Amino acid sequence: MPRGHLAAAALIVLVGTGPVSAAFDADVLRRLIVIDDREVAPIVAARVDWAGEALIVGGWEHWPDRPVILAHGAGLDVPWFPDPAHPPVFAIDAGGHAVAAWRRSGEGGVLLASLRLSDGRLTLLDPAVTCATPGPLIAMADGSVVAACPLASGTTEVRRFIAATPSAVLAQLPHPGCDDLVADGDGEHVLAMCPGDPPRAYRISTVTGLWAEADVGAAPRQEGLVPGVEFDRAAGRIVRPVDGERVILAEDVSAACGSPDGRAMIAARPDGLYALDAFGQAGRRLWGAAAGPGEGSLLSWSGDGVRVAHCRRDGDQGSVRLATLGTEEVVVRLRFPEGSAIGEGTRIWVAERFHVDAAGMIVEPVWATLKALLRVRQAVRTQEGVICTAVSEGVEGGVVERLTGSNDPPPGSAADSRILIGTGHESPAAWMYTFSADPGEGLAGWVEGGRVTGTPLSVTVTRKRLPPLSG
Image (cartoon, rainbow, N blue to C red; front, side):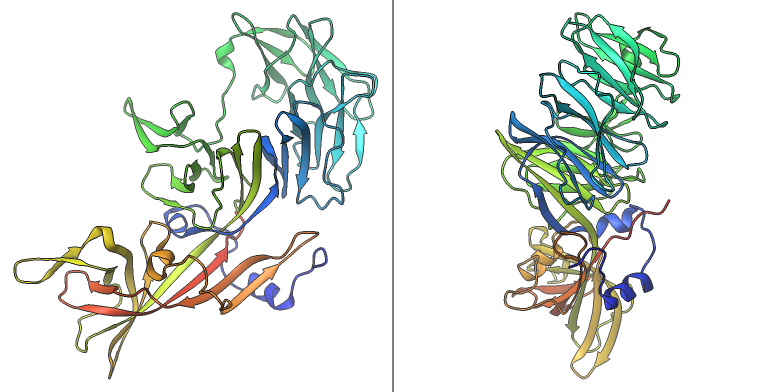
């Protein structure tokens, strides 16, 4: 599909219906799914981040060989940063317009270059400065890039680079390299974290060049989660400290990230991706996201809240995938005997078997056979009985698969309606689609607290891409 082309009918639907933004509240989380999931590149990722709508990935085609840096979704004809150094270190400018990264020099060492995402123009930030190896980078709000530049002499210069002007030495540190550069919060200082016994930190002014040794513990550590929640990477747990205790929200977690609005998280677990809130009250597996071999290694949520980059690693091989988030509504039609006391708001449990009391009355489902919890939206009395339309309100993902045997439309049938949109060189992706399927055999719907059961007649599924977060 040509770049920027939208089908007229699709455009009308997208701008004419639905909310303009969606925060990750409990209602959205209980319906959250992956509506489209595709591989960006078969690489072992060291870092993934966002520059506006473009996903920036640094890693290796075959670890630890062939370092790569790519810009996916930037609209570039050649989205690869040329000749990146090992390891592939990069920084994204504050406006998301350019990526700075180390490039191999033909004479040995590395040079700092900037790739403009609008047209792919590559600029050496200071051709006169060659560093021995790549050091950490940090993009400042004023458009400059601060870089740790290890030298062959065994020391490290911290330099400030601005395009088209000579770089300035801010500090010369007595270390062969630095592990990290961290913004100090005031916009004018950075903390350089350097290895050693003991490790050392230096607070450096990017304006005056004055610097001094600082407390190693003063550097902020960001795990990319929501306020009040911690990711214990060593234990593989997401926890929330409460009154001196550490409440476990999720276990067996290999990677995690927080939503842009700070209200939700996505965690990589052995069997796939999971979405959860900050208090452990809502959580579900994200059906539609590919798990694949190896384990989840990195996650990054786009600023508009619509997409999540998820990476896996299996030895020296890896994969970077891009999941587009959406919501799912599951509507079930059921038939109950004539005279059944069913009205709007009635709860219906769909299961294969039910527990009964001594009088033969149903008391609850056999939980291992439970398929769905529904709430009646409409009940109509007909000659065939009471026909109900009920919507799924359970928080556990996978309700479509439990009700019908598959998460996808029935084999050999197309979706009842489908809106596909493609931009640039990407193949079209689903923005909305609806399909119907037959319920599985042997299922029954029980009216909570009542005496009757009904028969599921059909399952209708509507999936929509999330609208972007506002603001």
